[in-house]
Length: 113
Image 1 (cartoon, rainbow, N blue to C red):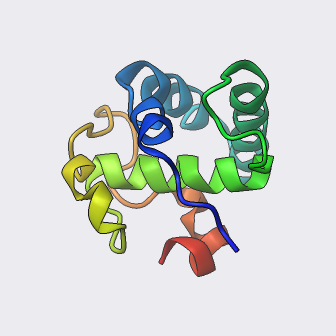
Image 2 (cartoon, rainbow, N blue to C red):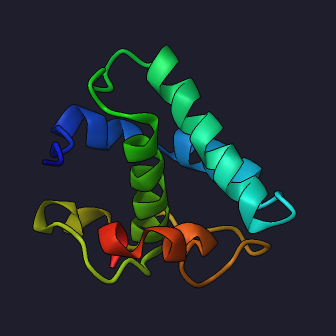
Image 3 (cartoon, rainbow, N blue to C red):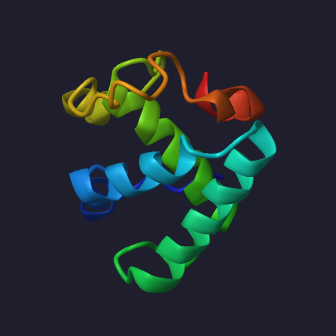
């Protein structure tokens, strides 16, 4: 059973600095495998350095949430929790970044679509 993200966690994941740090590293990767490795490493970094993240969350769960948040903030996430609607399209990507779904979305369609 998946754990819902608390309000403090969601606020953390939607902060401009965290979103920019994730996107700047992600969209400079040369291929999908590198993007996936970067996302998992970023999730590991977050889990080990930010005490507000529930310690029971796996790195994979955090990585999936990063992809979800990236899509949500850019305004392209098709299915999202009602409580997250206030974040939809509030932090669009930079001009040199994709305008469609995060390329890793396809690897987790059972969670994200």
